[in-house]
Image 1 (cartoon, helix red, strand yellow):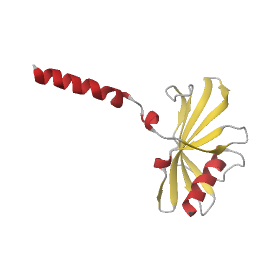
Image 2: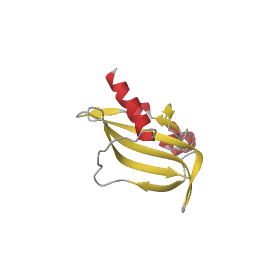
Image 3: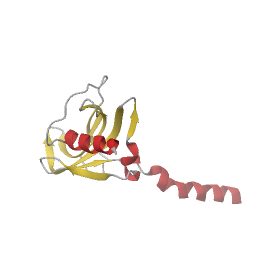
Image 4: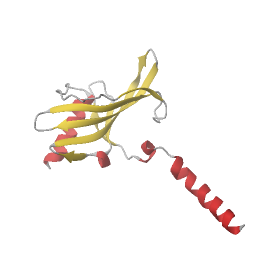
Length: 138
């Protein structure tokens, strides 16, 4: 009987940790703003380099929610690959959320073959590229 109670208590104590989404555990660092004044964040623990390609998780909070036929986007998260030497970026995944807590996915996309291309001045990709590639040089 004691073992059953202890097991139940141990399981109950672990539930809040286990039920928290990964995003809640992520420490996002603000790295700049887009030309639309939307803050751009990076997950510093996600920045990894392999074969001259740096990968990082990026987040953008929309100051003004983006109206779409499916509803409002309040936040977006991306996994991006940066080729700092060639000044190009590729998208591995994109998720748009209908709430600031990133719990309600409104739309997502994962390209089968990510293609590298240039960044766009004032965009989230430019802000992220400048931060990730500058950090690599240090």
